[in-house]
Length: 192
Image (cartoon, rainbow, N blue to C red; front, side, top):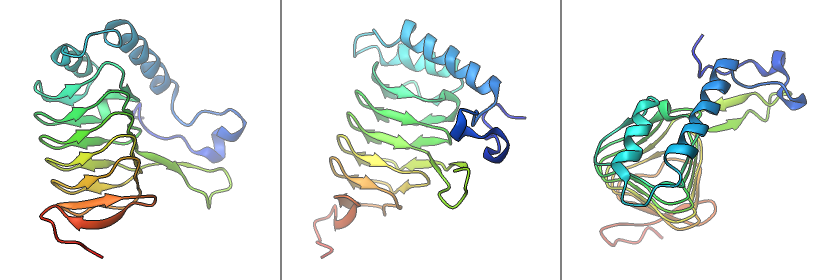
């Protein structure tokens, strides 16, 4: 069984303290968190390549020219992919229970949450459901936005500050609000 495979909520009963993931997954994440806190969380901002090296040691597929700030939270590095010049800004919460990928030059600004999991509200045991997130090349997710599970953000799209994006964002689209809605295309044409 994979260390990232979800356990069946009907048998593990997470609502009463049971686990959603295997023991090996939980131990790997404890080791990861300890390594990040001791080796990277204290490092100065310019040491992006050093932090990338640590992420790569834990299975992340991160380009050497990506920018990862020291106070990001990454749930499981092996679920993270970042292309050249992609950026996870200060205080980003990368809750990668499922794969999260950032295309070339994609920017995720400070305080943003990328949440690749939810719970099935129709299931009496609230089974955990993990769905990948993709941020396209040249896209920008602005400060303190929330991007939900299964969302694909198109190339060069913009998600405004504090927006809540729970569905796909088309290429070149500008999305704002809660829930985030398309207000215009980056070329300037309004959508309303």
